[in-house]
Amino acid sequence: LIFLGIESSCDDTAAAVVTGDRRILSSVVSSQTDLHADFGGVVPEIAARAHAERLDLAVEQALSEAGMALRDLSGVAVTAGPGLIGGVMAGVMCAKGIAAGAGLPLVGVNHLAGHALTPRLTDGVAFPYLMLLVSGGHCQFLHVTAPEDFSRLGGTIDDAPGEAFDKLAKLLALPQPGGPAIEAEAAHGDPDRFDLPRPLLDRPGCDMSFSGLKTAALRLRDRLIAEQGGLRQSDRQDLCAAFQTAVAEVLAEKSRRALAASPVPLLAVAGGVAANGTIRAAIERVAQDHGARFLAPPLRLCTDNAAMIAWAGIERFRLGHRDGMDLTARPRWPLDSHATPMLGSGK
Ligand code: ATP
Ligand code: FE
Image (tube, rainbow, N blue to C red):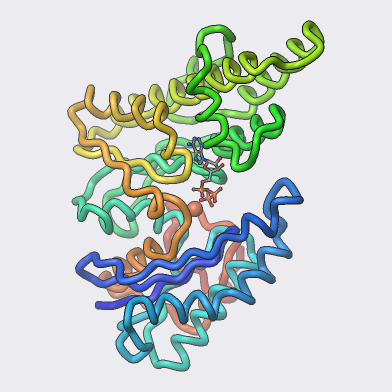
């Protein structure tokens, strides 16, 4: 099997060619970070337009890097949601055009399923396993038992950690994306100088909250500015260290609960926040304590990419799944209901 994958649900335009025996023949990611930089967030209209402009080129490049022509493919997989609707629509239309023009099967894929199935692409892991997806837009624990069988054990009830990192960076006048900038500051800071909350740790279960943590950091910053007339470099570093430690502790404790609730041989992480060394180490320790293997796929496959979409398409295709020209883009698509959205099937 050889699949073309297409991803355009957020601010990366991506195309990839992946084989049924887990070889990534190409993975092209065209980031739009520069287009949205002045706006402090992804602007949906700009994103949709850029996807529409860049998709053809990304597909062409993915095919040529893979040394493939359309006739060599076994199918086309595309992110059909969840995500920013304009971008998802651009990807779905592109995929439909290719599938119809080249007479190839079309498979619609849930973006989150793409992330959740990545450990099977990178390491060929067996079911079941636990996945902690922790990125700029998502934070949830998934118990994965089959290519279309996910149960959500819990997740954030407000911000995702990546979003909280980005907002804190903005408050401290650090560059975006905030995660790497805060990790760099935190490396020189004292995590114990400031006392930040550990939201929802006092409540049972795997739900999390990160917006209160950000607000607490904001209050601390304002207090320091009021008392000292400004922030010293060490204040910034200590604040970053305290924040990073708080996030790591929350994620680690919730991972412990997830593993206790669903004992599995493997805990995997995905999403940009999993790049953070302190957070990663904290979660890895929890996995070790439970005798579970810890897996963090290479970062370029943990953040948004089309190889994971091609792979999730292959997994669905193997289960006999095909979509027609009535495949529709949906902004919301909870993973526990992995039926493909069809035109006219409602919200
Ligand atoms: P999606 O949820 O749709 O995948 P996204 O594009 O925001 O959204 P990613 O690309 O997976 O998500 O991750 C980006 C996020 O990861 C940003 O919020 C960024 O700040 C955060 N991040 C990246 N590196 C680090 C790091 N070293 N420490 C903490 N956070 C990080
Ligand atoms: Fe994503």
